[in-house]
Structure formats: C-alpha cells, structure tokens
Length: 326
Image (cartoon, rainbow, N blue to C red; front, side, top):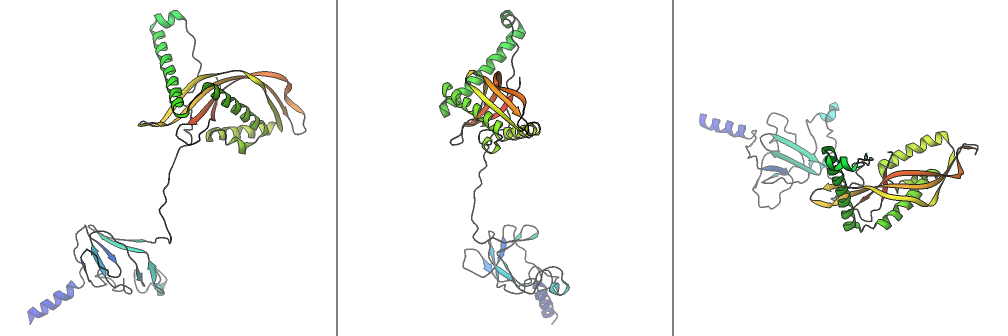
C-alpha cells in the first residue's frame, strides 16, 4: 500500500518536472511531420512547473525534438498569466496571436526567441564602395633648391638626393599603373584636365552647384559650396573668362592610393598639376555696378590643382579633389 502510494506521488511529481536535454538539441513547437529526428509527446505545461498551466494553452499540438533549430508556426492565446486581459498588464488574451517562428533552445539555460518574418521577404546583398579617399596623399610642396656641390659632397645633400629619388619613383610608379589600367596618355590627359579647369571655373562663376557636383569629389564640393556662400554675401554676380591657349601646364606629382595590398588595381590615382593661364575677372553688386576686377584686362594666374581618378570603378573619370596654395 505504501509502495503504490510512493509510485503515485513519483508519477505526479515527474509530470511537473522539466526533462533534461543535451545542449545540442533544440525544441520547436508546431504540428508533427515526418523527419529523421527523434520526436515524442510532452505535456503542454512543460516549462512552467510552478506557474500557471495556461502558458501555452491553445493551438499546441506537440513539439519535435531535433538536433538543429527549426522554425514553425503556432497560436498563443495567453502569455505571461491568464488574468492579463483583466488588469491591463502584459499581453492581451482576447484573440490568438500568430507567431511566424517560435524557437526554444537549451544550452545550459532556457531561452526563448520570437521572430516575425515579413511576408514576401527576400535576401538582398549590400555592396559598399568608396568613391574617393577624401584626402590628398602627400600634397605637393616646393622643394628648396640646393647647389651641385652641396647635393653630391655633403651628407645632407645625399639625404636630399635620396628623398627626391624616392618621390620621383613614386610618381613614375603611379603613372605606370595608370597607363596599364586606363591607358594613360599625357597629351590627352592635359587636354581633358584643361577642359575640366575651364568648366569648373565657369560653373563657379555662375554658381551652378548642381552641375559642379559631377566634376569634383564630395569633400571638394563641400569646400566650394562654402566659398560660394561667402562670395554671394559680398558680390551679387561675377564674370570669369579664360584666355586660350593656356600659358603652361605641367605635372608636379603623381600618387597612387591602394585600398588592397593584394590587388593593386583597387586604387585611386591623384595627379597634381600646375596650370598657368591668363584670365579675365570682374565682380558686380546687386545694382550691377563693378566692385572688383576688370574684364578688359588679362591677369596671369598660377593654380595648383589635384585631379583624382579611380582605377576600379567602371567608366571612372577625372575629378577635382583639391586646390593647393603654395
């Protein structure tokens, strides 16, 4: 008699205990279906031995014990406690909630995650690319001239000669990579950059910021916009004209900015040019009166501009990335 009562109490206690599962298993609720994993039935109050048995009380037909996390659907009519609808706290139990995925994992501690997948969702790949480095690599500065005897017969001259040689080799390497990837031609490059030089100055004179964005980098565009705002506070309009042909144009420096050391084609080329040209300039106030300059006179101007080009973007073109003052 005592033994049968002991077994009855033991069976009653086991019905409220949580089964021990290895950490490699996971549990997913839903309707049964044929799989290669092991499946069995457990009571619906499996995870609440001391709380209400209404935790998962409706729409629960069983669960599948598998070696991998699976997802399915079930309906939950009440979460947290059955009186949530009466006191207004927690979730409401007036209607059942459709859950897209309901997964409970065992790995030392119980955890529950609920994920609602949007209808018609599809995988989208995101590709991030750099349009400009946003800085000038080793900006050009004029070198102090030294005599022949100091260059070849003093230690400081030898160091200077070594530095000059390294700079020239960097420029030669950048131009060689540009020629190999994009087919660089010095004559065509000068013609193209002179057209850009004239176009950018004309757009600045007109204040056309929308067209200006296409021929300059993002950082340079911000700089030019600020300059235009300051100019508009002083002058109402300006006249600018380039006297062609230009006096001279020459390359001062060429640099390559590599993004990947294992793939040198993923790089940017920066060419520093010195453009000397005659220009005409005149500024007007709101009444149309001349307040600065004279468009009948030619002024010799020397500009040092840095043009930038990508080696890996399709149909990449040269853009102005900086104007240097030396």
